Amino acid sequence: MTIHARTERLILRDWTTDDTDSYAALSADPEVMRHIGDGQPRDHAYAEDFIKRMIQHQETRGWMRFAIEHQETGELMGFSGFDDKNGPLDFGWRLSRPFWGGGYGFEASAAALWVGQNTFGLTKITAQSYPENVGSIRIMQKMGMSQIGDSEEFGRPLVVYGFPAEWPDGFKP
Ligand SMILES: CC(C)(COP(=O)(O)OP(=O)(O)OC[C@H]1O[C@@H](n2cnc3c(N)ncnc32)[C@H](O)[C@@H]1OP(=O)(O)O)[C@@H](O)C(=O)NCCC(=O)NCCS
Image 1 (cartoon, protein in one colour):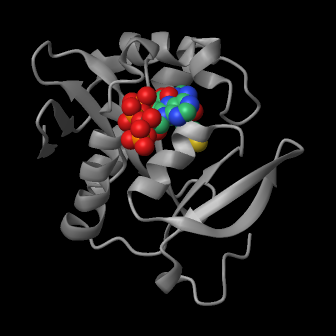
Image 2 (spheres, rainbow, N blue to C red; image 1 turned 45 degrees about the horizontal axis):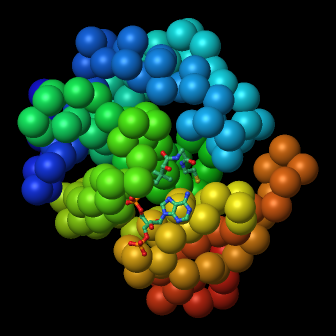
């Protein structure tokens, strides 16, 4: 089990199959999933497949969507990190609802970005959001990202953020 970063309140770490039920509960919450993909909550099998895929990545290349653990309580809070399942390197974050609004999203994601860039040398990182997900876009801005393009998913417009110096010609979906 690799610990990738510790922040004041959080640990960014590898996943284990013990995280499955907590991650499944988060993924079944319609409020958490409202601005993700088709906006539908996911079932237990989704969580099992996701964690299986994360474990494969951590055993091979080391980076993935890092699990976020609360230092004090040991609870699994969600993830922040990177995925290339759909092509461009996508930086994303997701927390279970009791942890919203306390600065954890930014705290975890700033640490995940540091790990991605410094431990794993990742570049050309993008982050995408539906425009109405203002908290998520605020996290991108606080990390120094700005809009590099547009895209769409499920018939909904998406804004694409990145570090503009890495995208001199903008982002082409
Ligand atoms: C997006 C998410 C990770 C934010 O986590 P969080 O811990 O509540 O965010 P933080 O407390 O670190 O807030 C970061 C910034 O966004 C702002 N913010 C967060 N949620 C907000 C909201 N709903 N409306 C307006 N601003 C919001 C905060 O005020 C803060 O900005 P500030 O420092 O300038 O005040 C969390 O809401 C979540 O998991 N949502 C569901 C999954 C999701 O949508 N993921 C992103 C897909 S693109």
